[in-house]
Length: 285
Image (cartoon, rainbow, N blue to C red):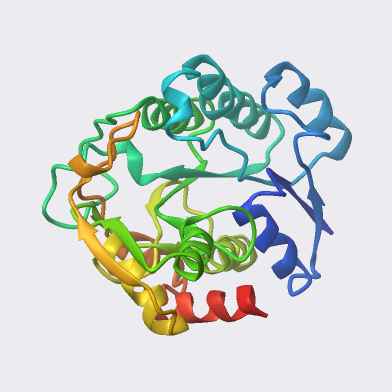
């Protein structure tokens, strides 16, 4: 039976992979968190993988505190770049397949049309810079790696925009949400299923792919959809990014074109609202 190692298994995507793993009983899954495999210590990675000898590695582990990365660039680089290089090198030397998860933040946000995988990258913050370096080193060390760029990830697990909005809308009468950043959210469960389908289908094609749910919305639109689905009584208003300054600059436009991943692997890419409804139903129990 082929083995799949999942790093960062306590995060949103890792948690969804755990839930879905029971549907893929033809694989043996090894879920690791930072207590078992710390990407802050890349030198420990090869020995850990040597003991397990996985056929596939799904790297969900990342330094994702976007604003904090501005003041901790070395730590972000260690996890998002250097550790990825070690994973990719080990996979190449041991005939294993690597799927590495990346981000829309590798782009600068100046596009006005959905971004394709070969569009020019130009990250505007430390998080995006370290994630781009991770992509580059993965393809240098193992050109057969699959890199999946995603955006605006949410889930019933962990901390995310959907959970924050549900809490704030229950607590407050009014809420201001940024309306000039455009993209599409990604339900981590949908991405998890796409990743496992790619592995299960056996049609491996290395390279960079985009994955998010379908739809072109702003964070404000996202918040309004959450309000509509839940019926929460909170007045939601849109504001420009300039009224909500953050240490790290966000891309104004980062809608991802999903044609390549759909054509190559025939994976499902659900419409964002239907996935949002499913996730909220799970969160509210």
